[in-house]
Length: 288
Length: 298
Image 1 (cartoon, rainbow over the protein chains, first blue to last red):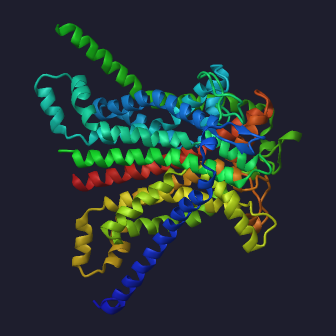
Image 2 (image 1 turned 180 degrees about the vertical axis):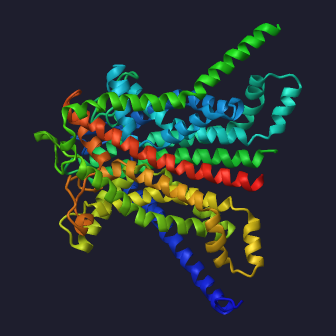
Image 3 (image 1 turned 135 degrees about the vertical axis):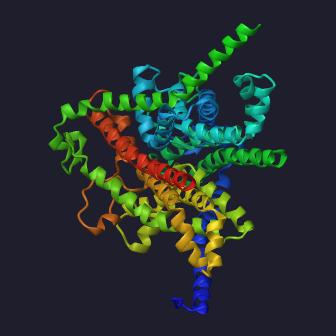
């Protein structure tokens, strides 16, 4: 059988093919770098002590974004307190306890579905259940609960992966010296998987911190003249604030807009950076 | 001493089991609340009216067709850009790039995946839409096209990272065998590696679709939000309005329990069902792959 193309021809195809692939990858990645540089370039001049710690004034057109920063911090923190035990517990069940049967498969399908539900539908659900039915009103609590359920699938999936990465031998040894299953999980498996779990939780919270749609009708308000005093108060939030000042306020200075975008990016990507550092340090130190 | 230890062990096991099942509970709760708030819409608005082409809730026109079509147009536009770009980038990262290049490209793509969508929407509004309006001489830069372009940026990280995982999971022996038969690396990629990773790549594309159709803030900010029925190919350059943007834009202004409120929840049900179908389809690709590998191994 004759080859369809000569070797020279095939080598040429390969060379141009690889150049083409490289160009496509550059086209896909270059905008990311460009966006980062542009936002830093346009937003950095706005960053000042007054901008970070001040309240908005003159109908958002001047002043700072302190209440939005505080609001996003509290929303994320409360979300973490709610979702971490739930997500880690569910992952422990799936990785260490669950039998391989139809019910477990149903849990997995439910997790896949939770991960796919649009964020605005979470917003509707939060409005229906937390704001109206449970009568929490538009509050940090309602927003954090909504965000917690939204981030749950991310945290379950990454935590389960971290638990499964712990070698089976560790469990066998622990059980064989007389430890119960829970003792094995708590003393052996969880500590070993901790860096992976932390990475997963932070990446989940990163998503929660940057989301706007789920808090749109559950927690966020346009403007508050004071900081929220309890979890039952509504709050300003960074992503919602950026949405408001870029679409709802006429005559907004672009410096404040870019400054807000930069602060939000630093907040979110800073969490990403922390997760990456934890992961790589744990990988370097790991002995198995 | 034995008995209390046994007791606390079984209590903790029970608690973990209950938490394990919580995901099912939450899916159930979400579905229940969407139904209980959304189904009254069917009673208050006749079905024939839902299928009208006019969305103008102030005068009780609740035709959701333009919103459905708006979501479809924007999503398809995003996929036309994101699927080839994402897949080829994944192939480059997994099969061609050197180790160092890989170490740079992967975190960059993940970085884009971590961008809050409101930031991308903001850039689309301030920069991309102005730019498109000027170079294409349009009356407004806020159009389905602008939405598609930014949505592509949201779908690309998902498509790249999942496709790259799928390509990575193809056993090295497949490639070795192909190369030993005299195929070039280029031929191996297209005739061996990519077909072997097909199910993972399809999953990646499905999840990309899910991301794009469910995205809210970007489309709310850059598509111009005019619920218009498409007339022809110029739809892409006109303002449009998606289902997600409609919920986000109008829910804040309706009275709880009004017809408009119920209809917005009804749109939520439609979205829920669409993403359910997309995600179940995506996961069946994975399940089927598992079964196939089990068949080969047994």
